[in-house]
View 1 (cartoon, rainbow, N blue to C red):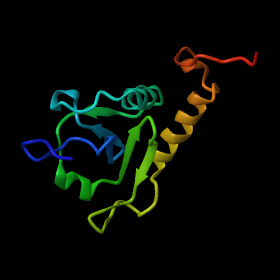
View 2: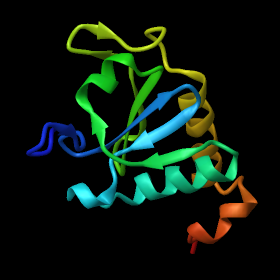
View 3: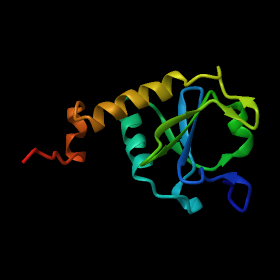
View 4: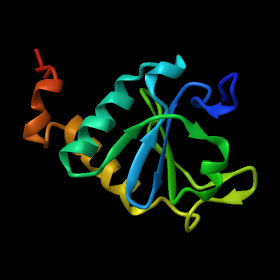
Length: 126
């Protein structure tokens, strides 16, 4: 979805991230996008492993030149995007930063990342 000014806003139910030259970018909340919990989590995870994150305007043309693109959301978690409008993104496969974030996100949600353990509420069997 695009903003009224033509900038990239989000997916139909997901937030969007692009990677270019090792920098992660996502539309800022000032564009009235979904204030996604998974979006916020991915930003914090990325920063914790040394990935630079920019919250800013993302122009449509940047999508076609991105090295990697992925959606985030409660259902989507981290979903790589490898094709937009019949244009291949990057190598046409999930990129290394996307895979790194997905692996770390899974570690966090499975309770295997002690630095984020406070994000979880453990449920015990009765």
